[in-house]
Image (tube, rainbow, N blue to C red):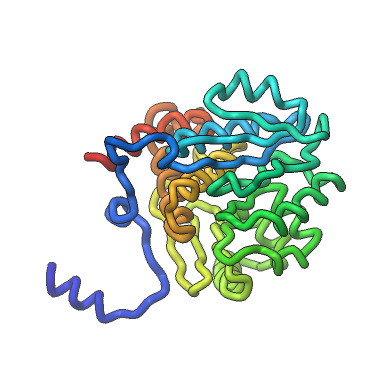
Length: 295
């Protein structure tokens, strides 16, 4: 074994594999004397009329992944829904009734934010996203419609803070950076774009790749086809946001978050089947993942 480790150490590769051993090296068990203030205050900006469910999934995942406090910022039509569905979350509402048109004034209160699930791409929401990206300087995850808005306004890529995490699926990636004919070319482009824009790209798929601004590429080893279902991406946004709020560095939050997400999905599939499992089941299984890591 030592000879094998010595042999492998001689290779200099930017391609890495994230497995349970890697996860254990990143995992931060809780201090028994800690309080909720030690685990960060996260902000989730999500939802629009008919898509408040996306905000609920992101919120539940964020809290289940360990954030100490969570504020969700929603259009006013989602207020009662969120207060009922996720009583552990605080709720802030913008001026818009059916779409997200603003964000909390005191953004410095939050240690991290997740933006995009279910927000739509309307003009007022797009204006909010533009302003938020120029205002918020803490660790940030961008997903779903936030990415679709950026794809329509590519100049916004230049205002992203270094180490901002974006989580596109292949079609969202192509809308952002141009069409590619196959996964190999898409991986090459993702590596180039991460370096060029100094961001972290989580390119979602069966073996999700995390592309760092240093040129590193980390492939995940967990997950299954049952996760190819609406809501899974919202859960991932919540998980990564929670890790950022807990002071995981962005590269670790991205790779570890993807691992946790996939591992919870594997447990959910073993309990409910790939066909029947839901994103809600995945979120409920996060606790089982942390118990496994504690062993």
